[in-house]
Length: 79
Image 1 (cartoon, rainbow, N blue to C red):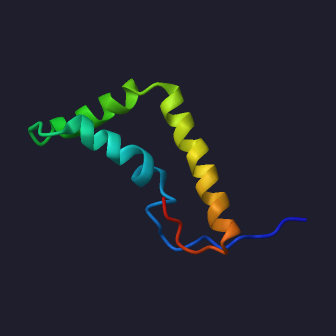
Image 2: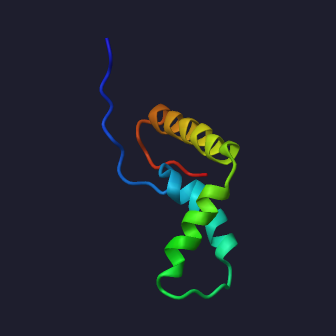
């Protein structure tokens, strides 16, 4: 038997792109300036250059954060 869990309200602490990707990507881009069409290329290049361990760590952290959210009844999860 499975329990269906309600999806918690949006929380940046539960969104992998917010807590795992955007910080390092922001550091990479720094104060660089791009032509409009070059931004997408630079982001994709950066994402492809990350080792598989980078993404595995993000998934591992997501599991911990979801578990914490479930254990506190779906309330906001802080770092």
